[in-house]
Length: 252
Ligand SMILES: C[S@@+](CC[C@H](N)C(=O)[O-])C[C@H]1O[C@@H](n2cnc3c(N)ncnc32)[C@H](O)[C@@H]1O
Image (cartoon, rainbow, N blue to C red; front, side):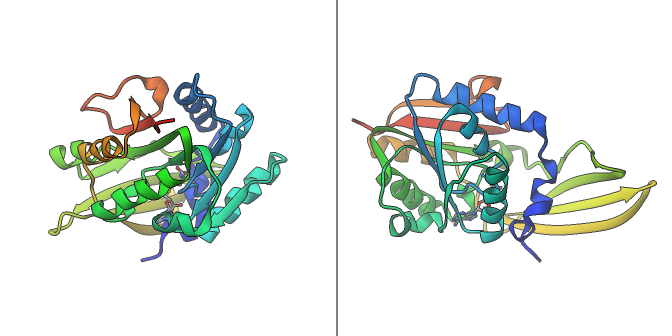
């Protein structure tokens, strides 16, 4: 089964100006009063979540496992007249690929659970090593505690349109016996009420509890832990939140 991240143009079909503005407002809320001038996103993908930071005057850097996603990110930044330092890197090996320090190091887009729980804790250590003293570590995730509680199976998106094509996206979530999960993504493209193209992808995740992540931040000495719904303008996290965001400060 192909990875969606080899087909960055399909991944980005969901993007539009409205989602861009929501992402921008999200950062305005998250970074308010934090004096963040440089930010590294270690799972930047095509940049849909972090490119709006360029409008806020933040110097953005990024890394990702997928060259195809980075290439698309590079092109989108260039269309905005910006050049970004983008590097292919597994987020488990950040220290091999970056030596500088950033005011904020983030992992966006529910990317951490691509690796097993113990490895996620290692990724947080790798991210921490790149955060300046007094800087911030930030990540957003699906609420895996809720997913495991409710065992939801289907996740649908409202149909969206490109020219005369209607695009439908449905996710079917499989719960694997070993506790991991497969997200099966089915895109159908319709013209004149007929399916003219379909694309199928499978993403493999390792659900991770919020407590494990917050405990790790605490062990690493992080303070001022803020917990929001994602996007942050939706308010504080509750256990019913579908997707959440954490930002916390490293000791100075
Ligand atoms: C759902 S996308 C999120 C992309 C972007 N942050 C966004 O929100 O649009 C997940 C991203 O994580 C990346 N990824 C998966 N495993 C990774 C790893 N071990 N190291 C770095 N990036 C990884 C994928 O290549 C993909 O671009």
